[in-house]
Image (cartoon, rainbow, N blue to C red):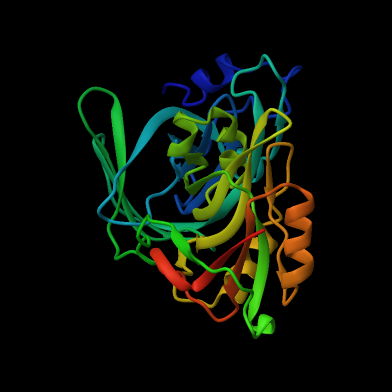
Length: 315
């Protein structure tokens, strides 16, 4: 009988990688265990591994498991892995095959509905990955993965920013607003999915930010501003978070969710927001030669296009 782990062993040196490299022949089990590992390698991806005949049949899924049956994701069949990989996590050294950080994203049991050379249909029973999925071969060696159950996530909200109405005088009831400086940059909605963002095509420096989200989907509202000759992203609102649309939620709830993400780095940050502090924020904007401030009603939902729930006050 052919050694199912021969290819796996040929790519690894036990003296140079912490990965398990068992020497004994694999023994068949009950074909129920699965693991999904988040792999920050040369390119971020997720590794789906299903117990089969004593080894873990493996696929690399660049964008993670699809959450919507309308969207299939690429799944690249890789070599079988040993059962010990069910619990593996750690750093694969630079220069080694699969170099990078690997963490266990989810694990649990699964049921097999069909298993053939061209189609694998399973039901996952994990904490994060649940439901019926099918892996199927396309032309050549390529595979795709499809979610068979209805989506568990909210639909994406309209991709159009909310715009403030210009006013000269500050509101009579400032306690009903949160105030932020207007940076005078370019407004953007940053759609992050599968550790990637389309905005990176024009701003490649955003790729590490998107990768830091892992499998967490999000839509950030913000501005790209130039400070000290360097472009940075200033985040001001959160429209979508981990499968849940926030556009109908009040600003206070969206702002709390944005703060909880703790977005901070050399080229991205969360903009400060001060409830009720209209005059001090306006003075701070004037001192920094910024164009003005924005007042956002604390109870305002996110409304694409111009809305009187947000007010712009020039300095």
